[in-house]
Image 1 (cartoon, chains in turn cyan, orange):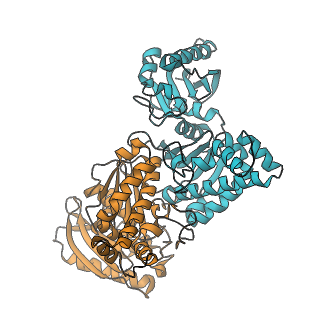
Image 2: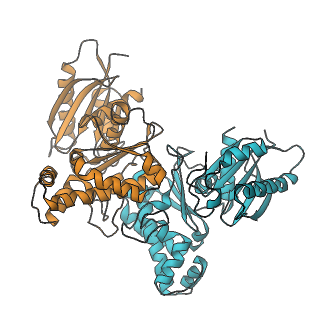
Image 3: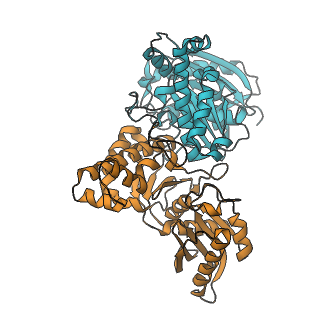
Length: 303
Length: 303
């Protein structure tokens, strides 16, 4: 129905952001609160319920909440959620079942980067693109893959962990237990670390970017490295999957003009001509809303 | 129809092998000849026509050839074939159109490793497996990806180039123009090269394997490296695609017991627990027939 509404939440390590979204992807209301740390599963459910109330209060009388979606920074989102390094206190919670019990509507949970890929594919950069890959550069590096207009979930729903494609076998240790994952060379965290390694003591990726803009060669060198390693990763993905588009999102994508040059050069060096020439490398257009819209889309598609 | 037959050819750099295959995957007749080098497209078409005649002569009167399939070691197989490092003289030939004109039946062409993936998925190791990846260790390293029981072709049909996933950014130069592709650490060619680098002057991967079996530590070290780099690649693929099974085929898969130990250790080191524990790493069961059967399957599925 035209008046069907989904409440979709982006469950971040710092903030919970919710929006009421209609079938066309129009955002009708929004709410936000701090992620309730130290209060476990019950604290999260309460916070989500408060956001839902706030979002619903702004709706018209004929608008009906028909489902609930969430983008979650976890490896496994259905059944007991698993692999949430930045919000481990809800590890093992069956969030889908608990949300369904609490709200009495169908619930769709997605990994946050997969949700962003779905959102961009619905209304953003990859609209009308059949095969695309989303890579999000934030605290970590996330990923989502769309094949034939469908998110690639894999056999257990853990697919899309592009941040843990290896780019340097003996490289920097990664939180995942391996070494040299692309996350260690392209996340905001990695940008700050690599800046320190080159003698620049700054606190945020944005500061490193600003230093590069002002001509600091150490800062520029960091983004050369970011671009190089992203180019290696995207080159491998272009060879393996031959996608039409790769979308780069997340906060550190703001440093686009500092890394896109070396990224493009490296991609063409690494990949065969056909997939390298074909794949468009673009920035996401939905910003922080990509994940919320993607989670909402998943609910609508399931109905 | 039960008596429908497809003629399917495996177009190798050394031999052309053809089989007549029925809808159940039963091989009814076979023929083989040397790959006609130095005679261009016309030579290839003649050789294929001779094989087709030989295969057809062995069929029963009520068996009817309804299509023609081929597995080709090329990057692009439909339209002008492109990227055939070992048979470059047919580069640019529209093999599909020429075979259709010559035989008057529908033709399906597949990249050879994708054909092998389809074959194993039809009748071999990955039968009844929804999401699988095939990797072939031969002169080069080929790959084919099956998602939701369908070959992943990508937007131009070049997907599956798993042999050119990067594992060592400054590694050994690769024929593709990059450096450090997995092909440079896991192909039969690479095995012989790495053996030489460690002081063992042998001519074939089989000889290196036999030396390892006899306890030569340099030869064992080569397969440690093969296993390690394959483990890195398959770990990245497990993280990105969360497949149920990865099938290893091709001639150098015969060295299985020399590399599977380090491969498995490395895979678990590199990938998250869920996809690493889930993915079965197995040998192909169809051997050289995987590609022929896969090409035949593609013809039947297209009808």
